[in-house]
Image (cartoon, rainbow, N blue to C red; front, side, top):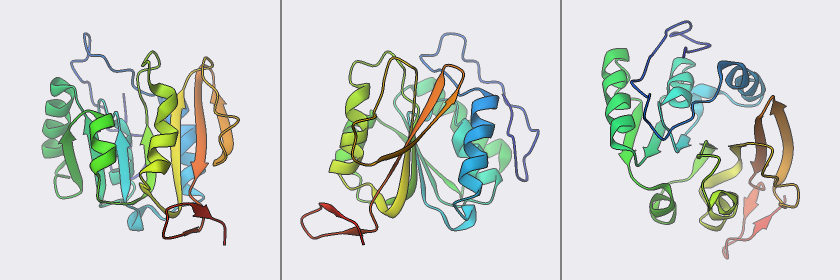
Length: 192
């Protein structure tokens, strides 16, 4: 795996992931995703949440491109240890908050809001289809923020009211959701 853009462009990292319950996003799909994101966001001003962070691939990519506020969440101890080690090697520890936690336990208790959230859960996760609803129910996005869910063709979010774009990269699909521009005091999204 490699970092595609920014100051660490071309840097390779090889997690000892042979027996990990992770499925890293392909470089091809990641490059397509970041081409979309760089046309919408100023990475230096973003607050990013990387759910089911696995090898840390997305987190490194954001930091490489200038983001200084990334929160990484994964429950698998070996993955978390690898990301801690990589953050030390890249000297990016001041840019990344590494949390070892079950995502479904983290979401309800997060006191922060983010400009961008990425979730790359295991495709076979029985509760995968609840993730978009939980992100919006617990108001994790800033107004105008984006949530991107990686999934395979066995899942579709076409009926979700906040879905606005779907991109396919082979068997990797990214569904894009957005928070409306204003949030009322009850927490219902209201378009401005």
